Length: 123
Image 1 (cartoon, one colour):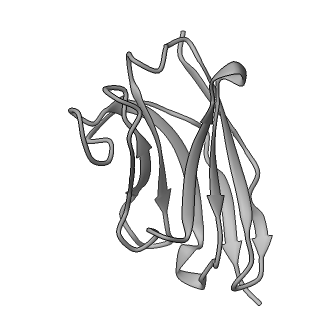
Image 2: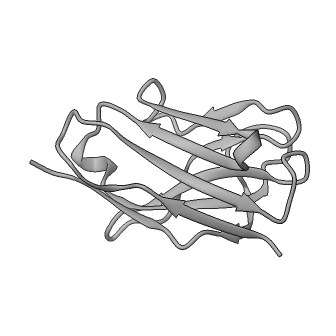
Image 3: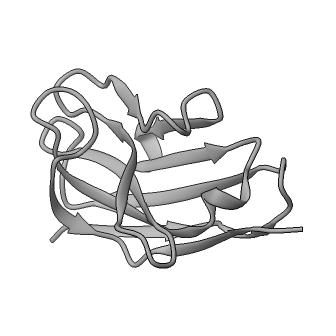
C-alpha cells in the first residue's frame, strides 16, 4: 500500500525559506517517480519538482528553478523540498505525489497523492 505523508509548511515572510518533507512507503525509487505539486487559490494544480525513477535526475518548474531544491534521503524513505527566496505567488497547498514522468521532466501521470500541506507566503 502506497502512502505519502507530508509535513512542514506554514506561514513564511517573502524572501524566507521553508522545508517540506514527504515520507513515502509502499514503493521503491526505481518503481515510481516522486515529486511535488502545488495548487494556488483559483488556479490549477501544477507540478513543481520531480525526482525521476529512471536515473534519479531532478526536474523543476521553471518559475522555481534556482530557488527550490528537491532531495531524497533513501535511508529514511523521505524526500524534501527546500524552498528559498519565497514569493507571495508561491502560496498554495503543496502535495507530494508519486507516478510516472516517462523518463524525464515533471510527473505526467500521478498514481498517488499525499494529503497536502499549506504554504502561505505573506508579510
